Image (cartoon, rainbow, N blue to C red; front, side, top):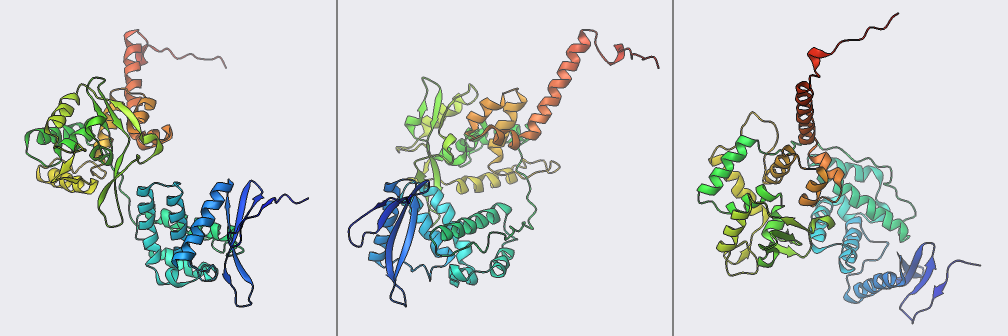
Length: 396
């Protein structure tokens, strides 16, 4: 007996049936040159999910945006997949825009843009990937993931029988990636004095990042209701993102699932928070400029001007200094003060403690050495130390 239980639907609406660990749906999308119907298949974990995908296909056929499987290119299919993910709430709007930026790079290549997915070959795609080696490794990684995911989906939909690109290797970037570092204690003191004594745009946001570890997108999305002076907490639930035209908008969710969090306002940060509330404009959001939202890039440009103008950075210290260094600075000072990694993970909104440990491994190692030195000093006070140890000789 077949394990495919078919659910019949009305004429022209396609069909849905149980298949392996979920459901599969089919819909006729046209007629081939031989006069036989061309069917397109979709899969999902539930009947509802499959029906939603079938509805998207029908709507695209009605509006004339549907592309026949035998003509669809990889970028076109990737765009369809991203729209499906967005419409069915699998990804947030901000995530969708980030993926579209990756897709635009693929679409800019003539071979990738014009070649139907069935005719893509190993050599052609490899040559395209080699043109991207001057990009950052993170960009190359995103391009590679998008290509592979789209090819796997094409196999699922039976647009192609096998993924011809499955064994293609991901190239490495020729860029030398300089690690973003925290400010040294001296640099932090100099910057703090400048930001608190000079009239500098976005100084409140920079200081808040340096004293709380919040991401700049999270800071610029704060509302008055997010600050609770009674409980001395800040509620973080949104972030600033950019649309396809680069304009800032509020994403009603944080960068990661664990990014949504409530953090305590320290005694050090409390005067700053009170000043921010006093200076807030008559707006829903705490940080606006001429009635408009402020993007992370705007603050970053000002930050770069400040550290250059006031000679903040010690050129002898290795590592890249960017706006994100303020967040790193907060984390590094917390580690130096003895904060546990699990507590720091929550404050920073990391999804996994391994991210915290890996990102700040140098600071944790330095803190470990300092603690061992403290233990050595304690043992010396007890009379246990290098000068007091007698080596035992074993008889041969």
